[in-house]
Each structure stands twice: as C-alpha cells, then as structure tokens.
Amino acid sequence: MINRYEVFETNNMVEHENLDVRTITIGISLLECIDSDLNKLNENIYNRITTVAKDLASVGEKIEREFGIPIVNKRISVTPIALVGGSACKKPEDFVTIAKTLDRAAETVGANLIGGYSALVSKGMTTADEMLIRSIPKALCSTQRVCSSVNLASTKTGINMDAVKLMGEILLEVAEESKDRDSVDCMKLVVFCNAPDDNPFMAGAFHGVTEADAIINVGVSGPGVVKTALEKVRGENFEVLCETIKKTAFKVTRVGQLVAQEASRQLGIPFGIVDLSLAPTPAVGDSVADILCEIGLEYAGAPGTTAALALLNDQVKKGGVMASSYVGGLSGAFIPVSEDQGMINAVEAGAITLEKLEAMTCVCSVGLDMIAIPGDTKATTISGIIADEMALGMINQKTTAARLIPVIGKGVGESVEFGGLFGYAPIMPVNQFSCDDFINRGGRIPAPIHSFKN
Image (tube, rainbow, N blue to C red; front, side):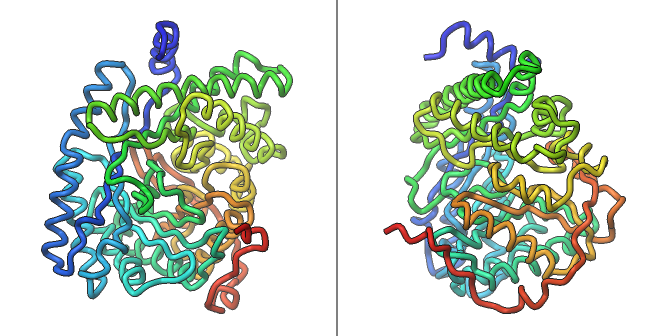
C-alpha cells in the first residue's frame, strides 16, 4: 500500500516536477479475429477492439480524478498485423484497409494511439510481412492514430539486411507521402532490434504472441522529478548521486504500480508490466538531457556523456525493480531529440552529433529517436544508419531502435515543428560517405557467437 506521506510527495511531484503517467496501454490479442475473408477480418478486428477497450478512456479519466495523477495518453497495442492479416491480404492495399479499421476502432474508444501495425522479420520475411512493410507509407498517411514498427534484428537471429535495405526505402516513401506536413508521418514508424513483447510506448508498441488475450501495461515518466532530486545533492560524490536516483525512481515507479493495479481492477483486465522509462517532453524541466547537465556536463554530448547516461539508466532500473513486481518494456532513459528541449539545445550548440547519439545508444533504453535528417538523404545511407543501430542491439543483447525523420525539402540549418509532445527538431547532418555496396549485398548478418546459449 502507498501511505499518506507518499501520496503527499507524489502530488508535489505532479504539481511542480512534471510527473505523469505517460500511458495506460491495453494490449489486445487479435489472433481470434483471423479470417480468410478480408471484410470479415476487418469486422472481427473492429468488434474485438471496441469491445475490450470500450471503457479505456473513461477509466483513465476516473483514475486521474481519484488520484490527481495526470494520465497523458490512453493507448492500445495489438498483435502484429502481419500475422493477423496473412491469410486474408493478397496485396499491400489489403493491409491498408486493416490500418484504417484500427484507426476507426481507436477513435471509437477514445484511444490516442494504436500500435501493432507491425512485422517481425529479424531472420526472414514472409510474403505477408513484405506486403505489410510495403503498405506502411499508405497506411500511415491515411490514418491519424496508427503506429507502425518492424523488428529487423535480434541477438538470437542476427540482422536481416534485406529488411534493413527495404526499410531505408520505405522510410523515404513515408517522408514523401507526408512531405506537405514536413514528413510528420515518419514519427509513427520505428525499427527495432530485440523488440520487447510488452512495450507500452509508441511508436513501437505491439501485443506479443506470448501475451494473454488482453493485458494492462503502464508507462510512467519523471525526468523532472529526477532532476529536482539531483539539484539537492549538487556536488556530492557518485555514491550519493546513485542513491538519490534509485530512491527517486522507486517513488516514480510506485505511482505507475498504483495506476496499473487500479486500471486493471476497474477494467477487469490482468496487469502486465510497468515501464519506468524516463521519457522527456518539450516542457521546460522535463528533460533527460537536463539531468545529464545536472550530473555535471555543460551540454549533453560533452565528454563524459555516455558514462553519465550509463549511470542514470542503471540506477533508474535498480530503483524501479524494487517498486514493482513486474517491470518490463524498455525501462530506463529515452534520448529523443525533438521531444527533449535539452537535447534540442545541445544539437543547436553543436555539442551532440548522430555519432555521439549512436554511442549513447549502447547504454540507454532505445537509441536514435525522433531525429530529423535532410530530406535528400539516400535510402542506402538511412539503411546504413539503421544497420549500425541494429548491430549495437544485437551485440550488446539489448533493445535498440531508430526513429528517423527525413524531412523532404529541408536541410541542415533548418528545423521542423511537430507540435505537442513531439516538439521540434533541428535538421542534423548525416555522414555523406557512401555505404551503397555494403547495403546492396543482400542476405543477413549472422547472430554473434555469444547468442549460442541453448
């Protein structure tokens, strides 16, 4: 149970330090919806989602009122659609109809976003997988709430370089489809290595095939809370610093545990996991980069940044696992550029580059996230950046991801405005040397030697 002091302390965090529950996400299995008739499949999907998630928005709002804790998003994740649509879809356009059904169902129940327009292709692509991937540009540009993800690699299987090459081309197509809106639909597409089945955070959320029929996952975030706590121990040694982060992460995760259990009880759906990732917003004081500066860096990207981020990520996890029986998802520190004002400041000051962000990926939760790059960047170059990110995840046995936004018609020195939680981003320069021959080889990169543990 949470005692009175913890409630008071939590309310102070909400009021002054930008603490929020970033999302309650209902994971819904669509396996029972599978049908060889496309119209019947779409009908089954719509009915399943609108039945299971019918009370999602109202319960989220009720919990907000009862506990005084902001719940920013109510979301849905579903079984990867490449699996669900395989028997009914004969061409990419068929998959687009499913995307529109997902969008309509999410709107009906009041969900902000729905994830799971996904394919898992770390070792190879089925015909259905490839059709779904090729449908992504049309699917994202014709829907408002649908998010898409593709798992391209894993420690156990290696990197599917054919899929990596294809995703570089698809990302540029998505950018082109939404070029009149600064290629904004690229924000709804992420590629993974070692994607977790229970991730409540978009754009990478999907309901894994190892999960129950329905599950409640909660994502909680509190960079502002951590920064405020560290301000009180400024100049202290690393032991004090680490203890402060752990204690703060414990308190933040307790909030997520409380909300998750209450949502589970009121919705009648089992509790899955709490994801305690420090996910920033553009709001002043709600920045992971600012935490790094509080630890002792002039800007994120300065020498020592990777070490500081490693410390932060590890202590967040250590504090969080003591507060909840089921910590999962990504859990740690996110380092998106556009969503974090401190990161934006670092880019504009010239303190951080793509290469430094890649190094930081080795020790954080995800990787190259919400990064705007020139719209004339070649597909093979984008695939090369993705391949590097996949390699980091594969070798280090961790989740890595890339959410890149090639902004058609804009270049280095310009910026792009996404609005809301997505903020704005300066266009970052990309290494111009060619990797064409590497990307065009085809096939897959084998799993590393340490993957053989059976």
